[in-house]
Image (tube, rainbow, N blue to C red; front, side, top):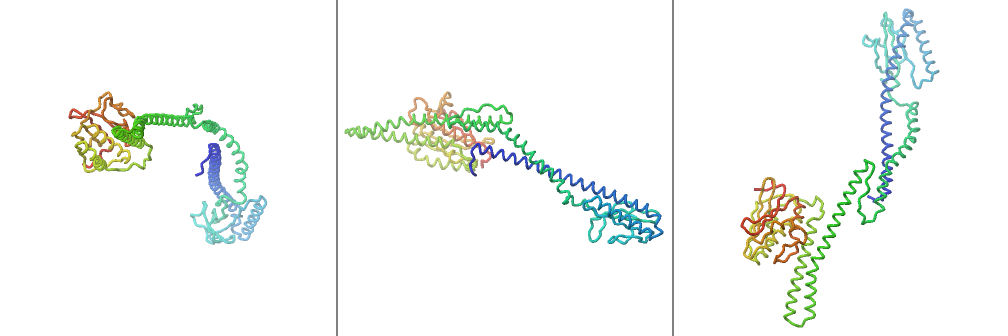
Length: 468
């Protein structure tokens, strides 16, 4: 889809509203027209019925005294038909057909127009409107009146069935064609005036620099107030995120400054010193600096990924028990080097909706911290259990633990407990917390029941998926 500028988008919205107004007016007109046509058909049918009923009664009253003289009766009816035809020609009735008449005198047909049925109307037809087939068509109405053995049937072709004709089409269309432009002009003015506050907001946003995320001024129009509020909330969220990213970059630069300085010092010693012992010591320091810098970079990347904005489609059903087994197997070598025992207690399967990359970072950092801070010959226990509707992951170590007053601070970026001998970046638990939030889980720190050490507990929702 082609990207539109705000001005083009505003014009496009204006044209769509104007077109929508025109369509609504057209639909209303069609509805009114359908109602008028329906009413016209109903009223026309009633008028036709009343007309042929009146004509039938008038003819019966006029020819009944002549019923015994068929010749005089024929002349009278013929004269009535002539007068009726002349009447329709004079008033210019659009397409109104002439009447056709039949006269019976005691079951004998005295007079009949061409094409009408030759059977005398039965009692069921007398005094009511009927439909007849004349000349192969069924669009005919009749009315029968009978008195003293004399019966008159008047038949006329119906003219209200179609609703439209060449003569009345202009009657319906002309008012719409004349009034439509006069309706669009005020509609154009009203819509344009109504969109003016929105155009003003668009212009204000367009004039801002990319770094200006200040909130918009409140709108005096209650219809636009929710839009302005939503835009201001979005700007506030962007401002908060940019501030966090700025702080993160500053903290990352500060954290990398120390290992890079160590690398620089030891590299200078390697290139400038001729003392073998000094060069060997500088080589060890250089390796330690590179290792520390590499670890910090890896942690920074893991921290960024743990809270990245991923699409919901990346969340899939994973077996947490299998994931724990796989990640523990990758940590075995590190545990063996420090003579630390790793234990896993988990059900055969634990299916949960998880984001694989972030939950992997969560598990890896919990295991890495537990192994790193446990003393040599210690024990790290990993347990996955079900509690109510939760799946609870617990990682226990035998390290120094975390004092209660620091259990909130340790989730901050680059925060490290004082007097720790182990090296680190201070990002491990920050990664764990962000990854847990990414997977709708909560993290809690507790003392190890064995007396020393720390228990990190992660509580995942949908624990009912555990296969016990």
